[in-house]
Amino acid sequence: MKLIFILTTLILTIQVMSQDPQPTEDKALMWVTVTNFDKKPLVGEQVEVVAITTKETQKAITNNEGKCWFLLNEGETYDVKYKEISELTDYSKVEVPKEEGLFEFQAIIMYDPPKVYTLRNVHFDTGKATLKPVSFEALNELVDFLKRKSTVEIEIAGHTDDVGDDDSNLKLSQQRAESVKNYLVSKGIAASRLTPKGYGETRFISKNDTEEGKAMNRRTEVKILKE
Image 1: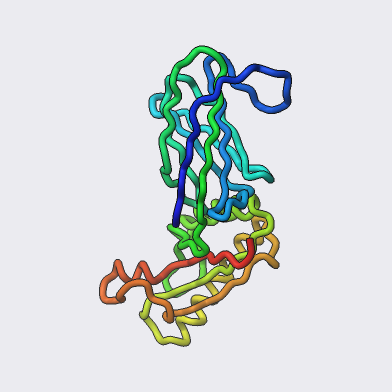
Image 2: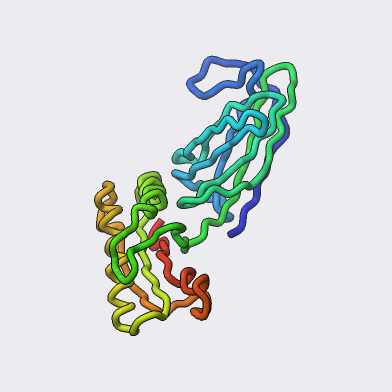
């Protein structure tokens, strides 16, 4: 994954009558534009800013132009975070000086989203395709992602370790992928956007000689088929 964060200098502005957000005497306005490395705007991306001293969190979703905005307290420093499917990543800090007048920032996040994600904390009963309740939080994050990205289509890939025979593991991985699909459909995601695919024990990412390695191989991945 590649990312570039660009923050322009403060710009003194004049308050005008507008439906757009406006800076105030004690809050600077930061516009954020999110694009890929071809400079194509990324729609439905979630950006968060967290104040270092107060821990106040603001969230925003990019519009059809790949833009969103925040009002930031002057004299405060903020962590800028970018959300993938279910994980927040710290990308940069923004220091907002305390100045007289009305000020704006222009920030650009250039982001190359990965095409394959491993869903964290998605687990099943041993030898079965029954989702454990601990999985629901991560799957609900995926639901939120798919609702924000209404044109995205995905493959749900199920993988196992090498315990058991090949055919049984292939069947089990397919059933687990279908269980994830059924959960997403139950939350309002169209089945036509979801392709469950079991790979069994054909695509290891770790050795199977330790419990940790086996756990890494027992995974559910999301592959972006269409953006």
